[in-house]
Image 1 (cartoon, helix red, strand yellow):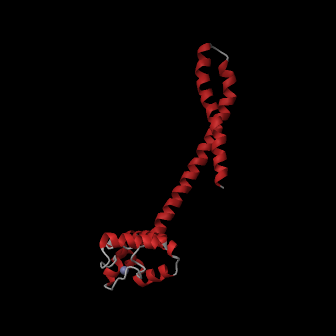
Image 2 (cartoon, helix red, strand yellow):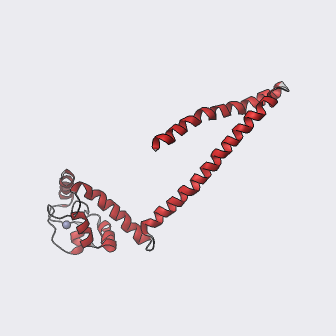
Image 3 (tube, protein in one colour):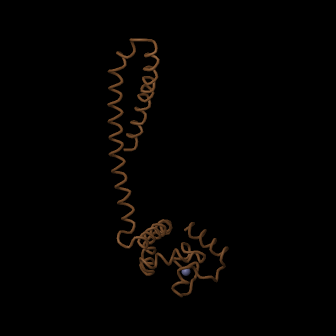
Length: 171
Ligand SMILES: [Zn+2]
């Protein structure tokens, strides 16, 4: 209710009460700002937004979908319909499903890479723990070389539990 009032006030202030919204202008019908379901979401200065949604879903379907929702949900519904319509126009076969499945594939690839990297970290740590006592003894030059990588790995080991805790807190 508040959102609708604000939007129509913005509309009225910017464009003037007699100017039809982008939807009514395209449909060539009279627009009464207070009663028009499209007016708060399809301002006259952005005709492309409604044109896309109308092309993909059809104006009467958009009208029906908005009428079925509470007023506070309509802004989000319009945003998602505009997103879906644009995706469908760009990609007539897959629409936004194309974007979702390509992101899903990226997630799968990255999760595999992450698992491999984590396995490599464990492998390197184990190699470091086994090799360091032998390397540390022979000469003074050798100890200064082996101590640096060792301290780096200790830093890793301090950081690792934190990142694990963050992982758990997400679930
Ligand atoms: Zn209108």
